[in-house]
Amino acid sequence: MLPAAAGASVDPDMALHAYARARLADGEGALGVAVDSYRVALAGDPTSLAIARRSYVQALESGDMPLALQSAALLDEGGMLPRDGTLLRICDALGRKDWAAAQTFTDRLVEEGNFSFLAPIVQSWISLGQRRYVAPVIDGKDKFGALGARYLDEHLALQAVARGEKEEAIGAMRRALALRVTDDEALRLTFAAQLAGRRAKADALALLPADEASFAKARTDVARSKVPGAIAAPFTPRQGFAQLLARLAVDIASDETGTALGIRLARIATFADPAAAEPHLVAAKLLVAGDLANYAAAEARKVPVTGWYGTLAQAELVEALAASGDRDGAIALAQILASAPNAEPERLVRLGRLLADSGDFDGAASAFHRAQAGYSADSLPWALLLFEGSALEQGKRWDEARAVLEKAAVMAPNEPVILNYLGYAQIERRQNVDVALDLLKKASALKPQDASITDSLGWAKFVTGDVKGAVPVLERAAAGAPGDATINEHLGDALWTAGRRYEARYAWRAAAVFAEGDVANRLDAKAREGLKPEYAAP
Image (cartoon, rainbow, N blue to C red):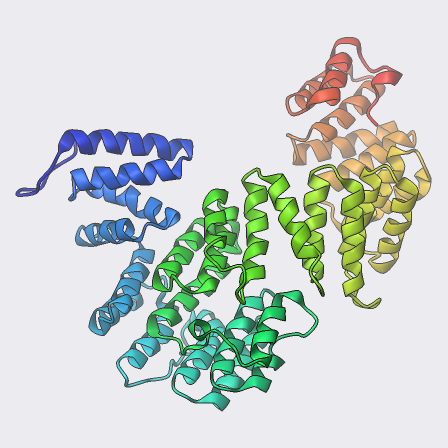
């Protein structure tokens, strides 16, 4: 039974049953049911650290701020608050304009160490709220100083605007954008809104590319001097804190092991500034990565479609819909985004990927080809040619595919993925096998640890009659990817031909574990009857 504190009002049966239901839902991935149940459990036993430990994480993942704060306070009293919980408590203090509490928790941030590199920027926002501003200073001798410096100019810019220092803000904005060479659309919109709010129309327009659909609404509003006041108003300390955590969440989640923490930080950012678009955009992106697509869709929908950030939110919604299984909805929305005037290549690539996943390879190839129009001949990414060639090949338009893939190979002669695709596609069709074998040898030399490329080379050796040379190469590929059905089938065919029939059947059975449909039937037939011409792998 859950422990009760003296004087506390406890309903142990209700708490116990709700806690058990929450744990079960948690294990089944039913986050909504789990959070509701943890809330009931904590209400029934408001002193339970066991409940608070789990409700804290689930509340953050689901976006339940009251439950997250309640759990955090209880864990803090018990000395069990996770390090990101200190950030949540700073968020709460800033929202209440309790500058003393915010400073106390920021001091703790320094003591704890994990997020200490954020402290100078957080303290500067607190000082701004106290109306005795002190600019953030990053200690160059601090071993984590480089992390804090990554965000410094962005906040110097926002704070300069809040202090009425427009020229200082413009310089800091330029430095901040120079550091963020990709994924900078939302930041450009934020900076432009701040400048437009200070009547710096020309400077605001200079931040917004004229030939990209994502900035069309913003450029129109700035040109007409009709920038929404909500996004043009100077940042407050809690809004600056939200911006900081949203940016940190993206960086932390760039490592797959940091996705869960990134989600929690993004959620705290939405708590700090629920009206801002950028925290919701980040939360939506990371929730998809964390297999919480339904919650991601809800976050994306919190950003007004007709606002400055609307198209960015719709792009995140496409990803969320696709991840949640609503492929048709994702494709329909992606088509709308891709049909906008001056649609960025990324929109067409997103559409092409969705169409390819749905089996519409002709539509995918067309989308990938259209995306190439957004680049000059000397800046065209080879990946777009690979995408188009792959779609054409899968759509059984091999002659067209080969021409596109050969163009990609000329453009990027040392890219193993291109060499592998072009070489293997020809081996499958038993075309130009000697040339294809040379392509695969080069790909394997460039990326020897890639099991897929190793398999391609081994299979090419087998197809060209070098069975003795093929077997060890395919064995190495199978060791690198033991769960790959294609690799194991190739190995089985080669082993059988080499006279190692017991081992061949073992390889085919290993392949059958992961195979489906016609491939599974072919593998079953080979395991029973041996390798016959009609059972050979393609």
